Image: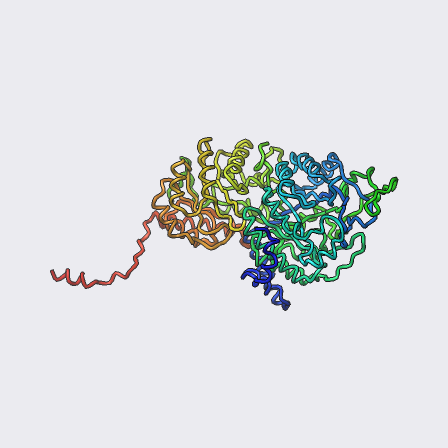
Length: 371
Length: 261
């Protein structure tokens, strides 16, 4: 059963798990929050050990046909865009591998012409020989569209709903295929059917009331754990960051509540992976790393070619979706500004000082495909 | 001196097997292995470098001295028989021993083993010459089926991996031990030395511990505590544990009557 069919009902008639989660989100004293954090940290150590998985995003393209009010890649924004050639993707990936990463997330905007399924499969095939773990965060596809990516060697799929609040979703997604709320909502299940083994979901906090957003996210998690029972589910709660378009978050999630949410997710879903990216500050990442996080990025760039300057010659400005001839700049525009700028090595050392082993490789594509 | 544990004709003086996940560093893991006295150490293949490139970012095997320990590759990460078999072959091709801890747990929430896929993979791997140590639920019939296809041990769980809940499957494990023709290694859920002692006193031939040691505040001391407890429990078994009585043995009316005859 697809989540879109039970979503409303799961919030109207909450399960025991959801009610317990809801109570953990209530305003809490400092002592209460510290107690929650201790519980969260203990559960994390028990299920994931004293370890932290590391990954890096690799942006393939910032071309996009969607108009999303909060996103730097929005079609409305006049920014420097490019789609990397497969050779250039390989150069970026080799740089990340040299840094230590063995788990790479391929990210792209939605643009069927530039970022086709075939292009993505080619990128994955090229990387597979030297990157043990490859995930994708690209425009939602049909199950049959995902299968070639799984066959090529991708093991993870990341898709955030952005907001689970229908009206806000409608207001934020003005044009383009992303407007379809339910289609996006069922993407994780389509990915699971296609054979992805890790499914990452999340909400972009700042668009809507954080407690309601969190409850819907938890309902989604609960559903996926039941239906996609062979997939490792991960969850992320990115907060809006400054980006082209100058969108201002209307419902900020403050640091204290961010920590509360993270720990409440851990306590409610002890075996779900929790991802915190470089959107968050160094100070906050260091605080939450031992509390419940299981996966972190480091040294990230959120623009195509960001690591090695690939694709510079093909840069072009687009204005309302139209490329402007002879307008190439020196670098592609990023999706959002990152906050924690520490590189992989520094992050690895920091984690080790906290008593957490940085785990670079925890997957081997050899499990899936004969070498 | 306790009698040896014999698996597939090979003798081990330690009855404590260790897992290598969840440690705060490879160095801590190495020291804990040393302190535990373990001779069989299992390593998740998905975390190791199998390409032969000596990857410094996937060098867990460099910290498990193959001269000192039997490195027991495990198939954690595999969701079905086909994947587990492929992993075992990869390990063998990478020069690891032809021993495999067969783990197929498709559900990442509780990591409970899949009996159907495990039996299927065991059949294939035994035929290919692997020494197979399968991780299973505490199911006595499955254990017999695995013995029949030629596995070297059976490894029933005490409770789910990482749960630290001890021997919750006690009644099933008792049956399994009574019926086993191969060594029984209780794996998973052992959260305290007392749980390990309980398994050994029940008659298990060995125990496998990971989370309880790796996630302890002081893994080295915890490893030592497990070592001593397992040795003591085994010694007690060999010394002849008193049978548990389910009732008091006060003089009965029958006894009194019989005395008068």
